[in-house]
Each structure stands twice: as structure tokens, then as C-alpha cells.
Amino acid sequence: MLPQVVSTRKKHRRVSYVLREETGRHRSGINSMVMTRRGDYLYSAGRDATARCWSTGTSRIRCERTFDEHTDWVNDLVLLGDESRLVTASSDTTLKIWNTANQRVIHTLDEHQDYVKALAYARHTGQLASAGLDRDVLLWDLETGQKTVSGPGGQRVPVQSQINMTPCSGHRDSVYCLATNPAGTLLVSGSTERVSTHAIGLLRIWDPRALDKKVGRLKGHTDNVRCVIVSEDGTKCISGSSDATMKLWDLGSQRCIQTIAAHTDSVWSMASDPGLSRVWSGGRDKQVFCTDFKSCESTLLCRAREPVLKVCVSPDELVWVSGTHSDMECWDCRGPLQKERDRNRNSRAPSLHTISAVQRRNMPFGVSAASSSFAAAISAAEQPDSGPVPLTEQPLVVVQGLPAITKHDFLENRRHVLTLDTAGMVSVWDVTSGKRVKDFGKVDFDQQRKALEEELVVPAWCSVDCRLGSLTVNLDFPQVFAAELYAVDAGHERLPDLEDHKVNVGFRITRMLFKYWIAYHCQRRGVGGNGMSREQDDDDLPPMPEEVDESLDYKLAEDTRVVVSEGSMSAPLLCKRIAEMDGAEDPQLLPEWLPPPPPPAPEA
Image 1: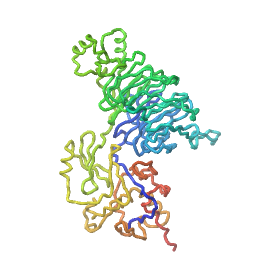
Image 2 (image 1 turned 90 degrees about the horizontal axis):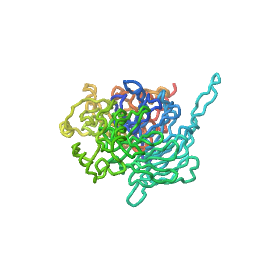
Image 3 (image 1 turned 30 degrees about the vertical axis):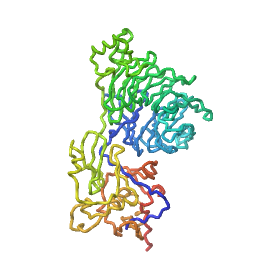
């Protein structure tokens, strides 16, 4: 019979599992990237809940390592110290510190109460800052987590220890970006705080050495501050905003020195040289500019296929761009950009690629509309709009990702899900096998859904979402045990012995997800293999036979990741693959509706 639930908990825990068909590539947008100092590896943070390491030092770019422990979008990442450790920040409200060599988690930091959106690292002091939608900026002393002890032969062996955390309170709204200088003498955070009746977007300045003292605030943007960079000497910073501008600030006097208006929409990412003299920027308008802050000229390098979430520049100035799609593009604009600079130095004639970005983009190429010579240049170039022409039309390399599922609908049997992905392909997935069972190609989703209608009514025993670009199946109590079907209707073969046999779909899926946990405790207690029976009925649930036929359990891939959480907006309590469940899991982390280990066998 089904498990009896005795709990005072107001909200029951959720069990989720993700259906992934292929590894080695991202399946949704890429929020952030960071490159090693030598430029031979690129790390990416994906909306598919993974971070990946790509080899870029050879002609063939491939995924070398995958960091797969988060349960929601990975929003930012930084490399620490000698680049042997990686930190990722996620919408699952956690930070994870990884060993880059073996892809194992060293620490999980879970002090945030909402999505963690940004990280900043001071490499000279080993201090990390994190911030997100919970309005808090947290400072982590990573050196306290890297203690060593004497090992065999006198060698120093690293051991895990508690990482000290200090909160910085003051923001009244969500924080979307952070930046610090290598010495860690100051920290700048950008938020959606309201600065006036008609404007939002505030930058706060912190001194990590004296957090009890408020250093300053920078006002000037009229919309959310999305990205910020601090100069290495800590005297200046540049911010990018959803008001489509970039601003250069003097941190000593706390005033804006220059405003650049090259973009036509939100500025979402920036990269710069150490002195902030040149800045590469991208955003919602899909354009990537290189701006010279000395001349205040912005050159359009390229146009990406999708809105740009991150711009990353390699040591040899190759420009890496990622966006809301799952691809990464590498652009080589070095030669054309140098020619454009030489041309602008030697000629006053208007350029098709460069604008005077101190003016708004509604002025043609950033030049005064009173310039008749420039108007003639536009006519000669036959430009239909007022935007510059990209220096480069095609990327040098495209690291292709996988299409993300963007739309889905359960079929009447409640096992099959019709999906539509970003490539326009319509498919059917079976949530009880974790596999794609049929492809229809590029057809109309709604018409195909109508063609698959059945006269079958099955209770909703699970829900699905496609936030990660793949199907995530969610099991919630008590709905998980609501669907009790004849074996044939539940997806099993039509056999004489099963003709009148009923199967509880959610019960069987739960057994599959926790099968090794069940087997361990059955073996330990000396009982049979069903491990899911109880002595008492639950009045709210349909009865199940005392003896469980294991041949009717569904089969999911052993590497399917199982997540236990308090709900869709909470941090994961447990995140393991099916094959990693060894019985040692803390029962306090498991869902209360999961049957406990069976009682010991009676003594002879």
C-alpha cells in the first residue's frame, strides 16, 4: 500500500528530475563567461543549470569539463587564485566552489535567500563578493576555506573548513552586478533602487575593510544598472544600464565624468582593458561596440544573432559573445578595428562604422544633424537607418549549443509531452522513460497537439516545466499518487498476466528515482526488495498491493539527476543522480512522503 504521511509540515517537499538527451553542450542561454589568464580555456555559465569548460587553445574548440550540481540557472562565475578553483552563482540561491580538475564541489554556500546574480573577486586578498535579488551583498573570506594540515611525509594537505561571511546591508532593491579591484580596497554594486520619482538605478560604493562606514552612492542612471567594471587602481568605474548608456565615474569625487550612448537598448555586459581606456559592450540590441573613452568614439564590431548577455575578451583581443541562445560566438575584429582607428586618426570624414557616442543614437552616426556634409555621406552610402555598419559580418568560430525547449503540453495519457524547441522542431517525450519517443519535424505545434488528442482522462500526477531548456518533471504530494491505471494504459506491454493489473504511475516513478536508497535499506534490514509497503492505509490515497512487482517499475537513465526541495523557489535540499543514491542520505533531507526504511525482519 502507499506510504502514510505523518507530518506537521505545512508544505510538502518536491521531488524533481530533468530529462537530458545529450551532454557536452549548453541547451539554453549562456549568462556569463570567463577566460583563463593564458586564454587557453573558457568557462561558461548556462541557463541549463550547468557550467562548462571549453578548450580554446587549439583549432578545435570542445567541452572539456562539465560542472553539474546546480538546479537552476547559473548566472555568473569567476576563477580563483591560480585558477584551480571555480565559483558559480545560481538562481537556486547557492554559490558553489569547484575543483576545476575533477569537477567536484568543494564548498556550497547557501546564505542567500533569493537568486544570486553576480560575483566579484579580489585576487590579491582572496575575498569574494556575491549579490542577488535578496538585496544583500555578502563578502566571503575564501582564505579561511583553504587551510592545510600536515600529511604523510610532511606534505601539506588541504582540508575543508568554514568560510567566513560578512553581510553588507544597505540596498533597498535587487542587486544585479558587482565589481572590485584586484587589491580589494573597494567594491561597487549596481541595483534597481529608486533614485528619484521617475528613475531607478543606483550604484553603491563599499570599503570591504570597514563595512560599518558608508563610502558613497553614484546617481545618474535612469534604469536598472546591469553591469559595472572597476579600474585596477580603484579610482574609476564604468557602469552599463538598461537606460542604454554607459557612464564613467570618478570614485574619489563620486561624480560622472562621461556618458556614452552608443547602444539603442539595454547594456547588459562590458569588458575592458585594465585602465578602462577601451571598453567592449553588448546588450539587448544585439550589437557589440568597442568604445575608446579618450576619444569618446564607439566602433560597431559585430551584430550577434540574439541579445548579448555576456562579452568576454581574450588576452589576444578575440571577442567572445554569448546570448539568449545556446551558442557562443568568437569574433576576430582586430585587423578591421586597427584599420578603423588609423583611418579615424588621419581623416575627419564620417565613418560608416564609428559614432561619436557622447551623443544620442537618434542623431545619424552620432553627428550633428546640421552637418550637411554628413547628410550627403548618408545619402551616398544609402543607409536606411541611422546606425553604423558592423566591421565584421561573420564570426570566426561558432560553438554550437543544442536547441532549448520553449513550449510544451501534456497529452491525455499524462506520460507523453509534446514539445517545441528553438529550432522549430516538434517532438514527443515520455516522462516515464526519460526519452524522446517521436519527432514530427517543423510542423505547427497547435495543429499537431490537436491531432494527438485522445479520449482518455488521467489525473495529473506530475507537472513539467522547461525553464532549463529541457523538461523538468516535478512530483508533489499528494498529486504524485493520483494516477492509478491499467498496466497497458500506463505504458506497459499488453500481456495476459497484466490485463487486469493496475499501476500507480507516481509510485513507480518514485521507486525508480530512489531505488538504490530502497535497496540499501532493504538489504540492511534483511527484508524483501519491495521496500515501499506499510502496515497502515492512507485515507487520502488509493491502496496499493502489499507485494510490489518490481518488473512494473519504470526505467530511467542512471545519470538522471534527482532534486529534493521545499518548492520551486527554494534552494535544493538534496541533488544526486539516481546511481549516486547509496542509502547514506540524511532522512531529514528526503521528502516526508517517501517511505522510510522497512522494519527489521523478525528474528528466527
